[in-house]
Length: 115
Image (cartoon, rainbow, N blue to C red; front, side):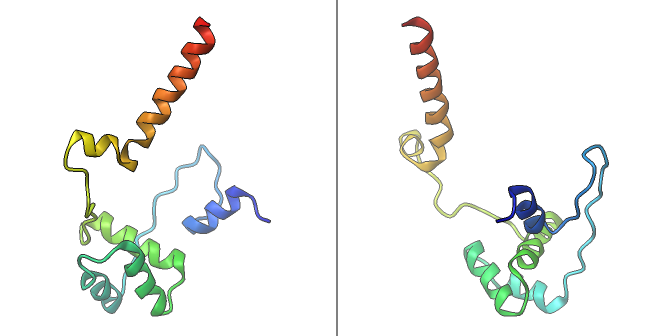
């Protein structure tokens, strides 16, 4: 079983470097047919886009990097297809998980301190 650091390194497809050392991201030259395939996937979920790139012979890491770089270049715009429409919808959705976790932590701390 590989460590989380090795799995993360493999996912990001970068080499291990010293923490103090700054490594500039390499430029990615996306072939025209791959770029067009991503551009034609307008409105599809990311999983489907990555899956179609994998069907063309790219690994999951390479396909993810292609989408990532195209987002960075501004060629692809990622958007949420179903954001909450109201504050009540937000509170009841997974978007607010961080809020409930922090609130629960504060409640536990307050109970430990004051009881």
